[in-house]
Image 1 (cartoon, rainbow over the protein chains, first blue to last red):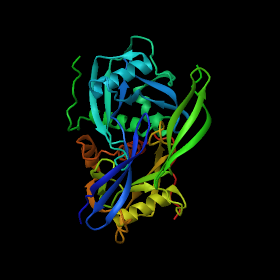
Image 2 (image 1 turned 90 degrees about the vertical axis):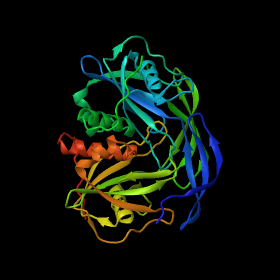
Image 3 (image 1 turned 135 degrees about the vertical axis):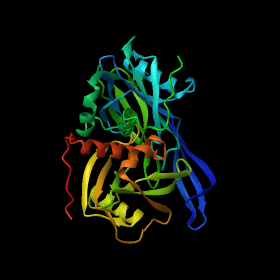
Length: 191
Length: 191
């Protein structure tokens, strides 16, 4: 049986600063017409900054979805001004941690949620990340920078200290890259 | 500096069948008052069914967010009738694949997106999953069941065949469990 639906029309229900909510009216040859709810959002990025001593630079920050403080790697949205997802990830790293790196490679990309979101999240690795400046946060952000040895990250995930699915996915892509069985060649940073 | 914000009030903007969109008005001691957009959703689950021959039972299905067909493990929302996340995951496995298992353990739980969603996704592993019946899909679902050797999953993720972040996270939790360094003891199924 056919898997695909055809979109007949969409209606904007609500526009926010981070996504737009739309109702999509679609039809399937066997299942008829139905409504689905979809969030249109820009691409997202996250990045694993690793210092020359092998520590991952992470941030503790308040997250309004869960109304609590989480432990994450730097990340955010690709802004209009960003030249590429890589540049966006580098900007987020600098803004949220004050660390920078010129050795950034793409680890891969995932769909944050293909059922309800239309966007991708690109994950990067920054080798030899060093502290070059002060954090420059948006006016509604506050972060605390913490460093953990890379080899402790598995324990932080398994124990529930790191809970963000996109952060867990980024570390999984790193594991696959480490094992050399990736098929998608990482793109070397051009700067 | 303090990380936490205090919620002053929330307003329901839109209610859909799968989440509710709210605007939350919050205050921070240094950053003042601001609006944030949050999606309230029920818990989600996913499950890795592994057959006695070591194959993972997966589903190909159309996803309306990305308007395309994805390769995923079974999963969905915890319904009102479900007794627990484990029972919900077992139900999704039966409905979407026709496979069942009495040996289900929790691998862990993640926040799908702590910035904008308030819910958790629970991941499970089903050992010795066997085909026991026909699929029983919702009227708006259509899936195609495919099986892959467990050892090929890394390649499917690295090559971009598997893209769902929550599926990637589930396989990462499985990897951590395999390596014996998890801290959260899995809950044995009680049925």
